Length: 156
Image (cartoon, rainbow, N blue to C red; front, side, top):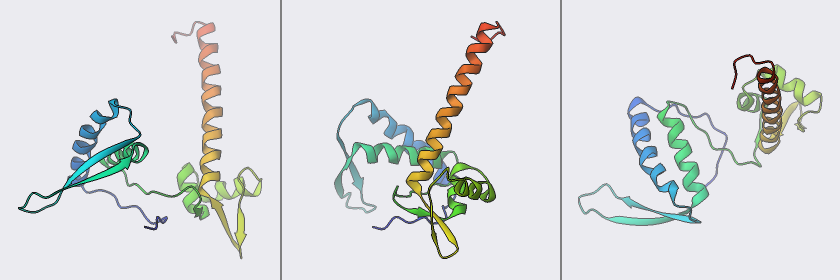
């Protein structure tokens, strides 16, 4: 099975409702920490045939996360970490404009390579950058909160 960076499909209202119900039911199983989970699939037939499929817990967790996003009406795409992204795909992950993202590349804040005139960036590098800036933002927010508490500005 090849995972590709394709355009995500926005779930229909019916799919979002089904995803909401499914994610709630599956979340109940997260209480038990196990290295793998078994899911029984009922085939759509009058025979009531069942098939058991064992999946890793990490895949089960990912399935629940995908369903939760779909329940909110969000489109979801799965991209392997080693995949190379276009500048637009990477900018979309960071929720920034493509020109701003290109500036990040040109200032060497995120590694990239060129294929002809096109820039390509590894998904893993984009996610590492995102994690780094999110961490910096959290640190600054914590510092601001601490200052507000010291100044008795009503934040507890």
